[in-house]
Length: 435
Ligand code: CMC
Image (cartoon, rainbow, N blue to C red; front, side, top):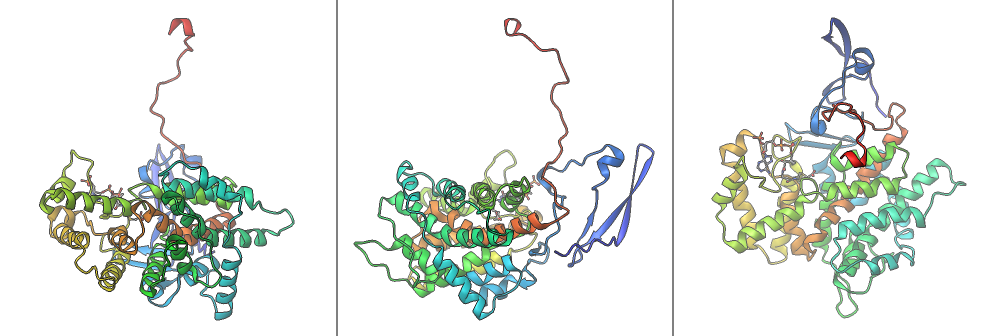
């Protein structure tokens, strides 16, 4: 890990007559941070930063986002280059191992994926006993944590072996778990993974093959899915990644940490936005609402309505992932003969109207990665409630890489923030008869 912690400057904080020199560090892309690790010890103060908007929780070598320039780097490589030239598994390898794989490494990684793609037969009972229409994100999270019971870490394995086995199991099995949760949802028999198929092909086949209907994998659909998984593969300290790091910081195993990350991703302000965008577009389309009114509603201070798929904590310009997703979505729909898809047309119209509106301009609100992906998933035949599951499959290598980095970082501690207590001061206990 690159913990180049040589201070490049110092800041002085004077409080209660005491002056503290706080070192300023610089990351490899020049972003600066104030090290306040001695603050409470020296001054008794804690910081107050809702949403951790100004707080760096770790140093990291994995990915970098420049929200002003619209730049995303994974291990130093531009997301645009990775999206154009790589298979998803290569990017997963890059994020987790820290380097792009050679041809040999790629082959053995793919073989490992095939070896681990089945899930324990007994796990099928879990799927069967879920209620009808259980949300696939709930099922996925539960199944991932259940893996820890079916594949416990062996004491005979070294730490590295343990991590390697768990990582490959998770990366491979998540597709099977996701596809099985869909098959359960529609009441069709499970389709087993095949060693003859590539990573994305296998997922598509497990989702869409049926005993009464052959599924021919369209190479362009596979390519688009491959691209979307790469676009989701990591994105520095987002909400779910922070959850994965936080759970892992207590010493919890990788399965448990990732399961918690899946739950965090589910929310509509995070990965669940891809489902929320389609629901918003469908709602507008079906109710014949005008784009102008939708924009006005999203701007109202007194409403909780937001333009879903717009805005981002870090980007103050167009999200480069959204640009790539929009292009791939158009190409895919054109290929599938859906060039005039009403939801795509509506999405483009809504985007153009928002980008010309002073509210969105002044707040730097642009489409994010979730704005166009759902339209493409829908065209592939993926149901709305599986959209965030696809996001989770894509984000998995990032979560794994971040969990490993956190576990190996000697500076990290159990995540345990402070609070500013605003409740009642201490008061005498009231016995039941007096309440
Ligand atoms: N529509 C309307 N107004 C918005 C939107 C939006 N989509 N996003 C932000 N704003 C306004 C917000 O009301 C606030 O206004 P004011 O300063 O007057 O109070 C201002 O812009 C700043 O917003 P914020 O909520 O303080 O920003 P944040 O960094 O806390 O939230 C966000 C980021 C992504 C949660 C937010 O932009 C949002 O809710 N977007 C819609 C949901 C969405 O698309 N989420 C997917 C995010 S990208 C995928 C991922 O990584 O998860």
